[in-house]
Image (cartoon, rainbow, N blue to C red):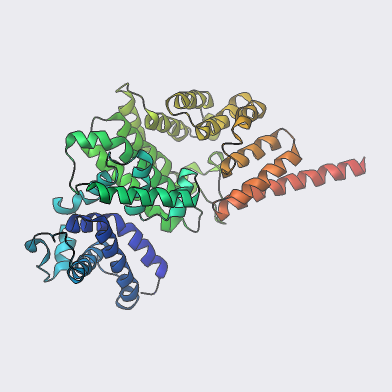
Length: 424
């Protein structure tokens, strides 16, 4: 086994379950993280030689647990260890753990970890940031990008959150029904951001990042089992399914981004779409609309359109207008502008987004859309400037390549016009 990429993917996929189990053992966040990191180092050393374990999560839990116990004993920490009968039976422990990973004993470890990170003693922004760092192992840079803030600011936010958890003596227990309901919004937002981090990638990284999308969908389904009558959780799950259904068509054979209207819709996952549409319809019957339901309804309109020209852009415009009222955000307005361009033309859309430039000055998609609208209006030089700015802000190589394609088109059009003037 020499594929380090596979090892990295296996570790990142196993992280939430391993961290949840280790936290349950040690009831100390730093101890659980240290144990997991030590297990990862041993995996990097042993797996290339010995081959992949039958169950990477079980292996990491077993090795991390033993490493953590050794570390606690060496440092003689004041915090008591778990009961002896929980940690001392080490005979064939990996097999035993692997057999129980899908049982009730381990099934809710990840969800327990999510609710701990989303404890009400923490501000909402810190809840989500620390959960992304601890549960999913995203880098500070990745989390900062998801929040559209600076990396140093996010580092400080996560550090403060972890310190507050430690100082507050947050109990590492599964919260009761009332506490779960109170923290549900923060947990749902964190699941959504995990999905976005997996979804916002380039073609080369897509296989390695796909487990983030799949993990977010799994967590959403787990939430839905706990909150079966909550329409917003139905909407969240539907939204993730409908978005992920398009994954096979998002990049061409050269790794270039394929816009939604140009995608081969036969590649979309019909199974995911059907599940998502059923959840959207079920959620809307409750007549308690929320932001996730509205976004899912928008995704459903795209999924129901057999051809791009069948898309109901008027309805999408209305839904984005509703979302602006529920969740005012310059990014929501930017997304609505795409629908406005389809319904009322690029000039109306450009007028809508121009006031957003200061707030979205570091946002790739703003300048990508602005350049596209300017190009449609024939304002080539201004479009080129906007596209140059978009390339500078691109998060992935695929995003930069997509913008360069537009610039190449502008240059060709300019050359054609110049040749026409010369001939004239």
